[in-house]
Length: 353
Image (cartoon, rainbow, N blue to C red; front, side, top):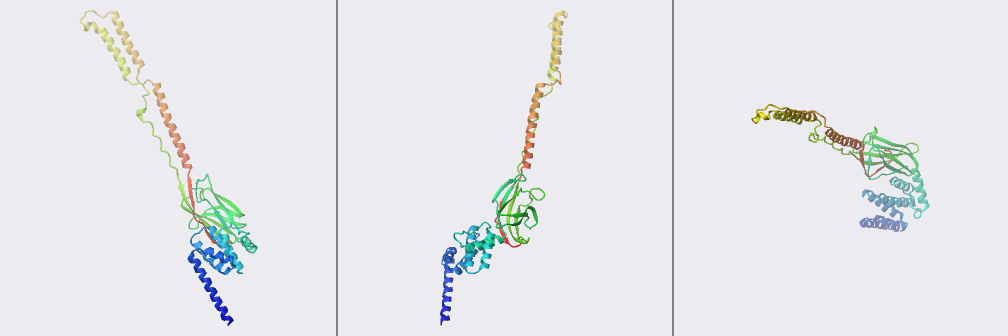
């Protein structure tokens, strides 16, 4: 009879737990229900609800802080149930998720915090903190990658192609609490990336050298080339002044003097006079002819025009300065290549790579 009553009691208890779980799932507040069970020292119920909550949060891509909180209470509940190995495994998942996490010692008793601390020392995990979007001058600036470790161990930090082939090694060595690794955006041979995506991989190792786990962070890359300036157009030929005197003014002066001197000599004959050419008239004609010769000399063809030469030289030098400025600016812009980096969500893998 007692066995029958005990069996009925167990069935009723199981039905009650199932009803409460279903109610909690229907209400969408598994964590609140799990906390009520935890505070009421119903650790079996609390563990079941928390496992469902952890799965729900992981599937929904919830923030790491929410998932860490649920895992902390799940590990504590398993420990109170006498499942120490299960609790250690849960704490290992929590530390791999967020190596910075520390349980509140005002909430969790020493048994829980002591187990957590032991697991943290044994678990080799790293958290990567990098700006979601950043832009650097390729080769001249660097993007800083902060690494936060769960405990002292050795890590390999590499950039890899999507197929896993090595792209560039960034760091190999020990890490304590944290470490900053720099990347100048160049590939292994010092050139700009030729791919649009690489993986930042942090591989943790046990003291024996065995792989302890990896974290991969996808990085989207976009090389930004600056536009160069157009080459300044040379001055049009119409802007240049003649640098040599033309032939026409000299010839006009010479021909004008010859015509006028001839007219002075021939004037009496043309007006019907019978006087021969007198000395004064010949002197005047000679003076006019001489003036024509002087005008020809002053306006001789091909004479350098210094004012025009200086104006043309200034015009050409101004163009050369603009061209030199454009050349220097284009050289600077070709050197000033920038790299835009977009960090995606990290992927944590426990164990080997």
